Length: 300
Image (tube, helix red, strand yellow):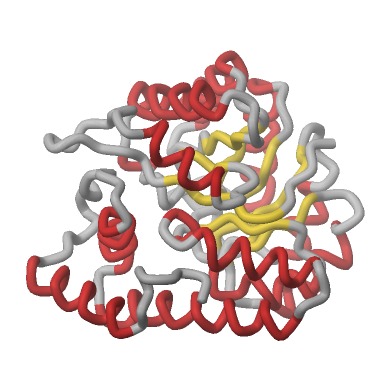
């Protein structure tokens, strides 16, 4: 079974000045993340804006990522789509170009329930014939699902190897780990809960802010693994301050992208309906981060 560990950025898709998907700059961006200890990539998910792109655009960036990583770490291609046939097409393509695994958020928009959800994932698994990561995003599609029942059923599907859990309900996450931890890689999808998730038994974390502060979260993970809880707590608090700032004062997705740009990576702007960041907000964000000494030493 494919094993996930450590910090996997939910990779930003790169856009050019006209808002088109591009692979320009991908080598520099991925080299930065790998050099700082990231252990894999999740491509085309919520952070990557996959659902705002055409199937062909998604294929282009998945292939570019797989080619650039060249087997150094696992690449998980998010193939979730409104239509099962599109998800299956992306799954087949991802397998063809060499993605190590595929993943998908729950079926979106239509409340298909647990039976429809199982059928959706079964179709993707058959199309890809690759390890399959289930992306449980609280409140996204499928109608109301009990995450514990959901995880228990999904663990019986062929190819399922991991569950990315993106919900603040840590008690439920603990229940899912107790039930499925021996069968699946348990991955935390809420950046601000990474450290407590590790204490519950998570093996890895996939998140947005790892794109622009990988040093902090790799540091948290490494400190936790070595038994240095004090350092892990200190670094986690530093990361949390940035996350709280972004969520409290700014349009969060574009603020995260803006910080990534401030670190030297021209990744482009988000697509609508994701709201932009204004020039005034951009200046205020830089001032807030400078007050935290963020750029002078990210892992201080």
